[in-house]
Picture 1 (cartoon, chains in turn orange, red):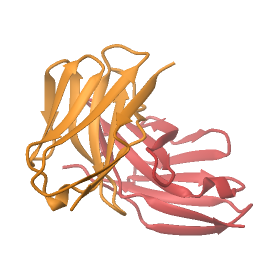
Picture 2: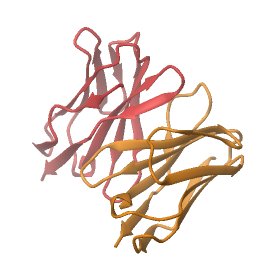
Picture 3: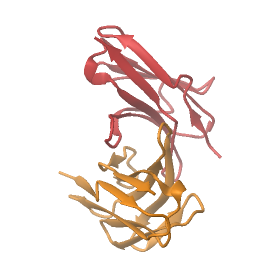
Length: 112
Length: 111
């Protein structure tokens, strides 16, 4: 069966510090991968998606970046965090031509 | 761009009653709609989906209705239970595998 992992589960970082969130998927190959951010009381905002290794599409211009160094690994990064980067970050995957997205447990990021 | 919004941000229902959660969408070209349930501190979980060529689909205790004329989607939960308390999101999927999520409706079940 397929599983999706995210870490860390929670993170508190000062403004201006770097960020690296990792997401890995097991039990499938060549998945579409997604990074979402969810602010408190808000919906899911798509940040990045990837249809293959090294292929990243950005939905929202910001100080975040994403990379996909391996087929089932998706990384969200920042060189310098802003207060507005605080939120709940969710990784998701699905198979090409499929519809349902499967979400990871999320990372709660607080920038202080 | 596309937008998916919900009519009501919060909904409270008595245990055992039926719940109806509504969603409006704007992209008439979307070919697929999904309802997700998100419990506090967790990622969203798939509940049920419906294709744009359908107007109704039933699952276990849940029914999704799609009205393309008015671009409206609803999720009906029968015999609501305390475990149904969560935030419910609708999402539309456009061609190109793009997903757009609404703000969410917080459902509270009163015992």
